[in-house]
Image 1 (spheres, one colour):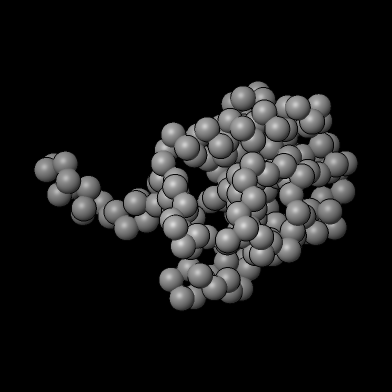
Image 2 (cartoon, rainbow, N blue to C red; image 1 turned 180 degrees about the vertical axis):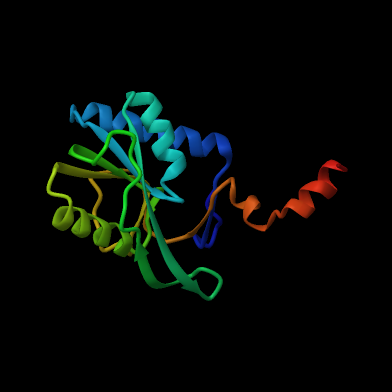
Length: 174
């Protein structure tokens, strides 16, 4: 649900999963055959996992991290993992790169540039996200929702960011 001021988008688990299913339909309708899904951890892990199951393709994982200031609203230095975790040796062939959103687009652009420059066995690379913000400098091949107001997206699992083992013990009275 988008707030009236357009500054916040609250997404339930059902909405989140429905959007991933719509992304799968969009990819399927393109008739593009790919060999592997490469998700960006952490945001792309949930969509990547579900797409991997729907398309019955292996799931590879690459970690990225952007240090953020002002409670996560300002992107800082971007770190991209030097290695990709994949169940099939080296990543190769046609690869679908998955993340949750194209926020500024800088992470996706940097990862795509790095993959094209450093992973010659990749013969074709396409990108898929759930959301693309209007401020994004990167245009994905597949995206379910374009967000013209650039809201802060509150995803359903973010409650775990502030949940510690101690709080779980208290919650479950263990």
